[in-house]
Length: 242
Ligand code: SAH
Image (cartoon, rainbow, N blue to C red):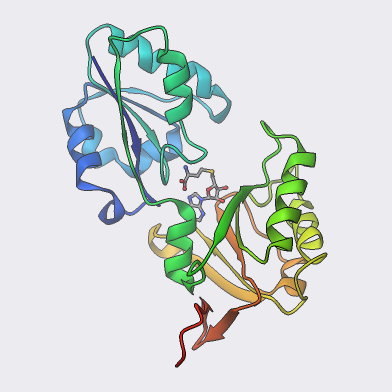
């Protein structure tokens, strides 16, 4: 009994692993959030589809395990990578009591990597990924992680930077970063990376980032003390003599 946890990458199917495509084509059932299912319609024709709203993650993964237990091949899709703020861990937890269900995680290009490639090369050296969503992680922990990574001069990639219920979270994250990083630290953000002509890119300073309006489809990258702008690209230098 096979259960694939598939990372679709950022959106454009050219950026999805061939193994993921193969698994989707092999599957009887595809499970995922509606927005992600829309990205792969050309691969899912004629298959059984299970997609509920965003809050139905547990329900959706439980349904996937049940379908696999019936002997079907099932794929659960996440955007980016399924093991990074995705469904893979939940599938392992839910399938723990069912050893007959074999889980295979197929890696995908995570948003930090997509955004970085579009911006230039901001992740050259040590970096961290931090989500500002306090839905499952308390804000105090998020703040502690932001503070620690900023104090260690790490480049910080921010997922889930802002939503209508959390309109000041990016501003708060900038203020925490500013405890340790200079106001002119170079930053960038990408909305809808590799999603056709909806992609938007911006480069600014940490000080300017505080008042920028972004949304849940955006990844923000806060540079470190060696991040510079070269020809409109955000580049963290590595220390080579040039
Ligand atoms: N599993 C996903 C992350 C899910 S968390 C991954 O590995 O990429 C959702 C967050 O990812 C969004 O709030 C946004 O910050 C980021 N994200 C996902 N897709 C994106 C895209 N195409 N462009 C920019 N950011 C994206």
